[in-house]
Image (cartoon, rainbow, N blue to C red):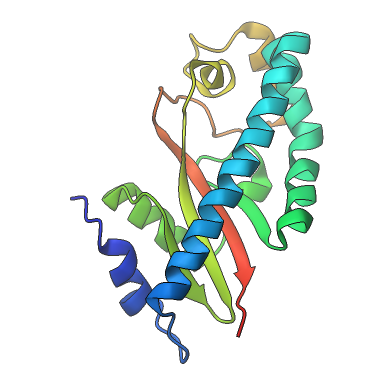
Length: 185
């Protein structure tokens, strides 16, 4: 059941802290989170697209393995926050769901199909937004066995022996953007 008010209810009830987040703060950080994730996604997709053009999907897998984290790290500094991706079906072990909060959010996004939300966690505000398989090119590395060519499969097995991030179809829910902001008091 989709509920457009669930993020607000979540904010008020599930993650209540001694200092409650007001609706203006929620909107401010939701807007910032949307802008940041749109920017990060554009930068990553542009770089991956360029890597595919340069050497095909297998080269893009190698590029992601070597460069994706440093690209996100540089954007962390630019936006003064901590940007990450998390998933139950991760490719990079660093992107595995590893906190109770991430697992709870994963369940909510999976079951309720939320668009995005902001929660308070201690002195931080955390923005979550779903990542979906948005383009057919994504399936060259994240699709079914018929979508991924032999050279790409080999590169994935070499660089990510515990890879869980395949078997997707266009528009499938693949993971969550997670943007952590230190709350301005």
